Image 1: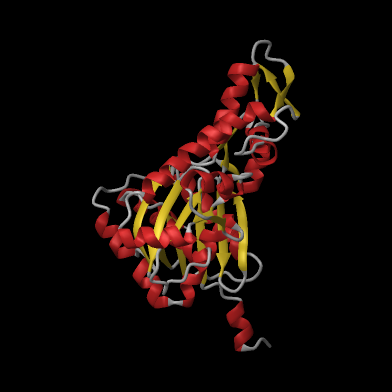
Image 2 (image 1 turned 90 degrees about the vertical axis):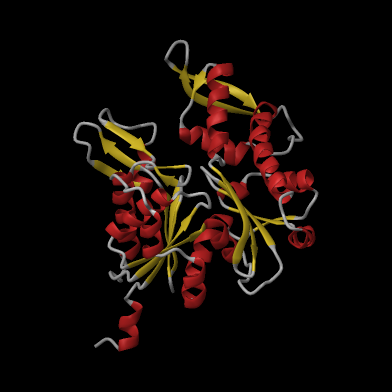
Length: 357
């Protein structure tokens, strides 16, 4: 017979969900990160049914069968397609539970700072439909700060720049609260789009998402490369003939594309830092900026930002998981969770416009 303590371990009572534009990451209290998959669905266009989710859908991207189309139901960190977001989240939550526990009593989810009440409610309803008992929501910047090691009791201010695929969140945190924040619906996906546009317009080659992601993560740099003549062969579809084709591109050719986008993010950070109270600015001068999110993994982005804002810049441990790590920590401090999160009542009261599913 199982002891009571063993039974308790089989109950997933607390789940953290970072539902992002590019990836959905789920952590379970006591088990850590249990799911990390692309926020994608594959749809059969004839039946309108979803035939694959997450990694399975991503593996079809660019190689879909005739009637199948892969789509991202979230754009810029918010719900663009409610029904499909709901089904995707339900699938991920169910998958995160597999391996024993089947009861999710409560979950805490992240929100971008400029999310509207209607967008909040759409996320809340999606979570409710995924059979989660109680849903809390908190600002992504605050969660990322806690996940990056900022203490809720620290009265001095910390600056967090969370660079996601579709959003960049800049949050200034002090005493476990957001004292200033700004969010731009613009992130590292813009690099992929700019690379694809450049190759199509200037090199006559159409490439897919897999290729642009590889170029961004393995070949691109935010700093002028030492060897600008370094080449890589890129394969795709010749724009003029429509036939399979290939071109050789150099690191010097890709660099200005990436730098242009990183500069836009850096400018937003610099502008935000000019809007702070003097004491907060003094704290940030001492402490600098912490980078989180998948965009923090871009080659040389910390050095670039450091030289741009003339302040210390560090990258959080496991930057992609900073938000979900911060969310899961909330369950260790119920009072803090109540103080920093939005719950069902506040979301429903504030969502004055009825959300049409």
